[in-house]
Each structure stands twice: as C-alpha cells, then as structure tokens.
Length: 270
Image (cartoon, rainbow, N blue to C red):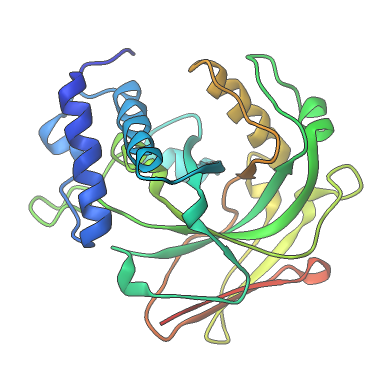
C-alpha cells in the first residue's frame, strides 16, 4: 500500500488525536479530509501518536488486537484484524473506578490477555511458539474510546478501519483480572463470559469468537509487527480481541464480567 501522507501531515494528525484525548473533544474522521489514505498511513499516524506519549513519559506495556471476529471484519470491509499499543497509564486492576467524563465515548469489551515470559518476533511465528512464550493468560476487559467520531455528525458517515487504526485502534485502557490460566492446560476457545451492566445481562460470548482460537491472534500480531521490524517483548500484555459486542459506559455504571471458573472482572464508572 505505502504511504500517501507527508511526515508533517502524519505529525499533525497525531497531535490532533492527542488534543482530542486530553480535551475530550472528538474530531472528524481522517478519511473525510484524506479519502485516499492507506492503512500504512494509519499505522504511521498511530506510531507517531505513540511516540508523543513516550516523549511525555509514558511507557509501552503491551498491545491490543481488534476486529478479530468475522462479523466485525465484514462490517469494516477488511480481511484481517488491526492492532494498537497499550501504555502504562492505561492499566487498571479489577474493581477500579474510572471517570466516564475523562473519555470521549468510553465502551467496554470482553477479552483474554496473554502475558509473555519471552519475546516473540519474526514473520513465521507459530501457535506453538506463542504457547511457549506465554507465561499465563488472564481474563481482562478492554476500555475502548473514539477520539474521532464513530459516526460523523456532518455527513453521517461511519469511520473506517483506517480512521480507527490511526486512533490507536480505539484503545484507551485495560482492566486485568486475577485468575491465571495455563494456555496449554486450558482450552481457551471454550472460555465463556457473561457481561452485566448494573446487574443486567447485556452480552455473552465464547473466546472462540476470536479467530476460532485466541492464540491465533497473538501469532498474527507477532507476524504483522515483523513487517515493521518489531516484535512482542518479554513481559508484554497482549489483548487478543473481544468476543462480545462493546457496551457503553456511563457515570454510575458498574460493569461485571463473569468468566465462570476463571473469576470475575469488574469496573465502575463515576
């Protein structure tokens, strides 16, 4: 695909997204002004935004994978997942209280998180290599946000995957559970979850919704990063992708996700 945007435009886009995040004031989707921008452009914008975070003192702690379900891929007119970066200020323990007003349009998704004991890199990373490199898997929630409008208020057009990727694949946080799963001793495909908002069941799902096996997502990400000359580092947290639809978060909401024998992960919004 290649880049079509100039370095100065990429820098400006990253700064616009950061300003939107800080001021909680959404911007228009990028493809309104740059309809011919490529996915490579979008990842370049994301990388520039991450560079701004690191320059401000943030630390990379992992990655997230998104758009792992076939339904979402068809909706976004793509045939592969996307990814973003997790930063240290995004991590919260289960039971945390977050302020909904500190985000533009906060939503919660149900995930599994892989914690790596060793690095993963290269264009040929396999499922077996992922299992060997994984120290444990934990139930987790991803907090997603939209620094650009999901639906443009000017023309009613929904943002594309190119807009989302430039927005760090919508990543805003991770809430991590306490139960550690052995990736070889647990059939991760059959890990199920019941999501309740204020005690009412809103979503249910199985982890098989993530590419049929969450491990495949981690292998895909390692191979995809190889194209940028990067890899997954030891100690990283990697969110494998949601296996429920996202639910919106409003002040006063308590979101609890019951993973059955693997515990409950909860987050409150003030």
